[in-house]
Image (cartoon, rainbow, N blue to C red):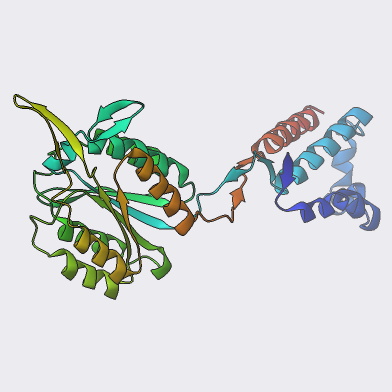
Length: 326
């Protein structure tokens, strides 16, 4: 639709008519007589051509030019379709473990056995896609913690970066404390109710410069809430030369520390033994940290005033040429 930014300018439309109606016209003949004292010499000159009265068509062209000029001054704008603004209900930082143990194939996805990282990518990717209106960041950690994606509304890019992550990319060990410390650093300038970290790991802290509980204390001071997720099955069948045997692939998972981190910071600890549990955990996180429901929209505006202004100038130029020829 078309909208005028300054519609009050249309009050100027009758201005030429008011000027002609209430301001007396100048007597051109009388003025000329006062300025020419040599009347005898003027009598010998050929009679001057009077400027012909404007025809009705020229008058209507002048009116049209004036209307177009006023229309351009009112700043006509084309309003596009409403576009939803990205509103941040939460600032969520996700920290994903890329240590060597995430390669353990104790999860199932679509009926086939997959490693822990593949299952995490599938479930966490869906979680990212559902967080419309939130800013999402991604930390990957192994021997050290690395910021893979800063907080952004571009969920598609964060999802892609998560999919491109690989086991061992950040090292073979697990630096949980460093991951928390990096999240604190990246979120400390955000509003207090928007500092949230979702940390997923399958082991214990075996690397890094900061111990997990020390990092949790720092998180408490900075009002950072941490949800921790421990992944890995309780039982797994291994077949080797001596036959089949059952083992616990999650024996290295430090649930005590993961629980303490969550409780200290006001979050919760979740245990994901399979893909179904992991899905439920992310559904619960959606309920615990709901997406902001309030939406705002804006309508793109395109300025249209150059068109009526250009036509008005062309008409005015044509009228001037006609009067000069006359």
